[in-house]
Length: 245
Image (tube, rainbow, N blue to C red; front, side, top):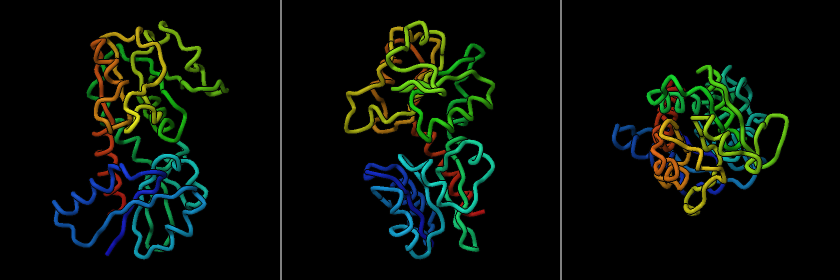
C-alpha cells in the first residue's frame, strides 16, 4: 500500500486529504492512502514522518514550503528557482526530490481571465506560496510588487503605506496571506479597497470559505474574483502525475 500525505501545521481543515481520498475511491485506486501529517515544527519531519513505512509522496503547505528544503536531497529546476516546495517525491532509491506545483495550478487558474490591460500586480504576503505566484507573473511578463506588514528590500509596499492610487494602478491583486481563512472569515487584508474597479482581478489562494471577505470587496466593485479551489485541484493533479511518473 503506497502512502501519501500532507505536511503542515493545524491542517485539520485541509483540502488535500478529502480530495485524494475521494479521488482514490472514484477512480478505484485501491493501493494508495492519503493522510495529514500535522507537525508543530519542521524539525519533527524526520522523526514523525520519515519513519512512516511505504511513503511515496507528500504535499507541503503553510508554514513549511520553504523550511522543508534543507531536508530534501534534490530540487526540480523550477522549485530551485522559486525557493519553495509543495510536492515531494520519494524516488526508488529512497531519495527525496522537491517540486513546486503551485506554479502550474495558479497559471492555469488565472490565465483564462487575463486581458491586455492586466500588466501590474500586487502580491499580498511574502511566504512560500507568494514566491510561486511571483514566478508565474514573471513568466507572464507582468510587473509585480509584494505587500507586507514590514518594509524590506524585497517589499515596495506595506499595508500602512499602500494607497488607493496604488490599488487602482495594479489591476491584479493576489492574496497569498492566510487572512480570511476559516474560522476567521470576517477578516480581510487591510488594503484601500476603494481603488478597486471593474477592470481588476482579485485572486485569493484561500478556498475555505469559498467567498472570502477580500473577494466580496472585489465583487462589490465589479471586479473578477477567483478563489483558490481550482488552483488546488490543478496542483493536486500535477502532484499525482509527478508521484506516478
